[in-house]
Image (cartoon, rainbow, N blue to C red):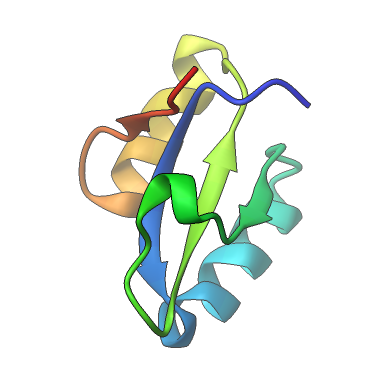
Length: 71
């Protein structure tokens, strides 16, 4: 999967968000990487490029724009 953008969330939030994304068939990956400088007890939910309508849904779910994934 190509990696376009991501959100850093706590493990506590991850369960509900992963369930919602899966139910809506939105592609994502869970990533823990030193490159992303994720704080302890957090994880990144990474997304590929998404159609605008789906991105708007993801943006609403997370409360804002994602962080561009480093090349």
